[in-house]
Amino acid sequence: MRVTAVLLAAGQGARMKSVLPKALHPILGRPMISYALEAAKHASTELPIVVVGYGAQNVIEYLGQSARPVIQEPRLGTAHAVMQAAPLLRGRTDLVLVTYADMPLLRSETLERLVARQKANRGPLSLLTVVMDDPHGFGRILRAPDGTVQAIVEESVATEEQKQIKELNVGAYCFDAEWLWNALSQIEKNPIQGEYYLTDAVELAVRQGLAVQAERLEDPKEAIGINTRLHLAEVEAEMRRRINEFHMLNGVTLIDPTSTYIDFGVTIGRDTVIWPNTYLHGRTEIGEANLIGPNTIIRDSKIGHRCTILMSVMEGAWLENEVEVGPFARLRKGAHLGNRVHMGNFGEVKDAYLREGVKMGHFSYIGNADIGPGTNIGAGTITCNYDGQKKHPTYVGENVFIGSDTMLVAPVRLGDRSRTGAGAVVTKDVPPDTLVVGVPARAIKKLRPSPPEEAEKGES
Image 1 (cartoon, helix red, strand yellow):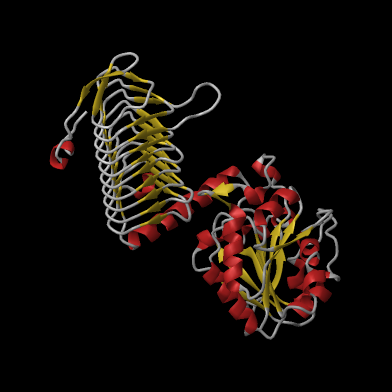
Image 2 (cartoon, helix red, strand yellow; image 1 turned 90 degrees about the vertical axis):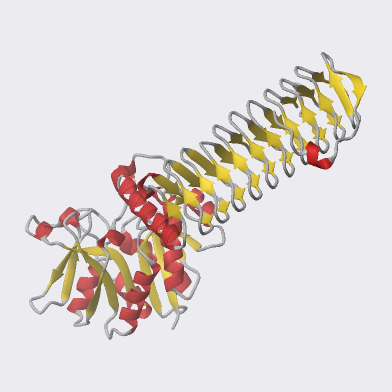
């Protein structure tokens, strides 16, 4: 049986008080519509349709090839919105699953149960309901004395008595497609709001003597819709809880889950420990047995296994295995730290590769550079990579010892096992096994190559 989801995302969300379309407001790094769209995809068999209106072009650009957009203009209510999908779906689907873009907590499993309910229903539609004390602006479910669903009354037109009803319309429906298109043409404009309500389809089915089924939510939190920034914060808190719970059940230790922020889509390997006030954003991938935080921010970065990152900031960086970073280190876009690199406090790396075993103890900046394995970078070392117009590279060979406060004026190359004296300003290439000192730096001594085991002992 063909099932097609129609996602309603045309509203402006005036109560959000924002120029951004409500559907694009982010939750844990992703627009809220992405969660609703993913859940709808799992519950349907065909490519979803998204009804857009306010900020249509921005929403369409975000959707890309993930859904077929249709524009609702003018915006005359939910029934009118669903009608916009009729030209694409009439005769091409058996069931129509209708949900809202501003309900990101609604799980795919719940929508699958709704679809299954309608498949077993002899009547034309089934809907989701929930019992909650806070109505969140939802319509009330009116039932007959025998318990069958008779109608849905929107909050804006409900009487005071009807507003006391606790069973609410979640806003997700599954319709028999052939019945739906005929029913939409029979729905009349509400005289108060001047809109066509999809909820009136329930009353229409009842008048025709057809059964309306209701599937009740097991978790009321799934029904939280977003109309204000308060609702947005409420939903994000619940989404954070879900994501953190997922990672903990998969072998990750969160010392304090309530103070740990993990975006949707971040991957974390087992036996990794996350300390409080840590923020993991974007396309971040973290391997196994790492220690991260406290007070650490990581965005769009890749971390291998058995690394330690303490009170630091990373963005667009790559750490291999057994790397030590921090405290108070900053890794900017393009930073790549090889196996067993040590990067201490108040260091910064940008668009540079520190190869295996490099030690950069503290107070240094390395940018647009390739640092050879086993090199020791003394405190205060800076790659002077920008001449005011363009950036230039610095190349450092293996087992180089860079003295404290060295300035490496790019473009420049330091040969294997070379050394710089404290305070040197290196403006020319340094041959291998050579000691340079002074301002500008000059060669004063040819060095005897050190045995490998001695070269590994360098400290800043």
